[in-house]
Image (cartoon, rainbow, N blue to C red; front, side):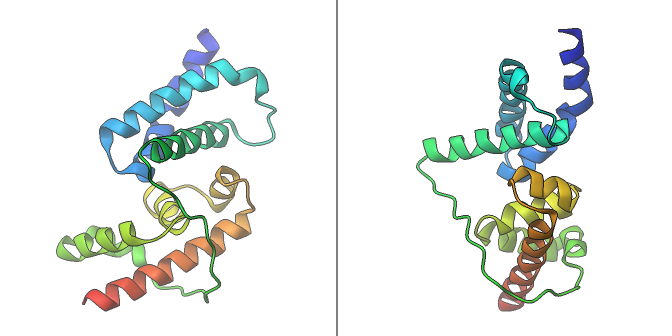
Length: 161
C-alpha cells in the first residue's frame, strides 16, 4: 500500500489537471481523479507497462469522464475531419481578458476530440505522445488533431469578432 501512496502523491496533481481540462468543473475533476486512483488500485495487476503510468492513469480518468457523460445522456463525437495545419499561436489568446472569454466559449463549442486534445496540449501541457496514448492513437494523430482544433478555434474566433 505504501507504493500506491507514492504513486498517488506523484500523479494525483497530473490526473486532477487532466480531469479538469476535460470537464471544466473543479468538484467533478476532483471526483474523477479520486475515482481514478480507486479504479487503478483495483486494476493495478492489469497494468502491463506498455505506456507511462501517468498515461495509464489519465486513460482511466478519461474513461470515467466518458462514463459520466453517458450517465448524463450526453454523447461525445470522436470524428476527425481533414484540415490544413496552421502555425498561429491560439494559446496566447487564453490569457487576455475579453478575448479569453471568447476563446473559452469557442473552445467549448468544438466537437470532440478537438476540444479535449486542444485542452490537453494547450492548457494541460501534455506531449503529443501522452495525448496519443490517452486516445490509444499515435503522437502524429494527436499533433494533427491539435492543429485542426487550433484552426477550428481560429475560425470560430474570427466569426465572433
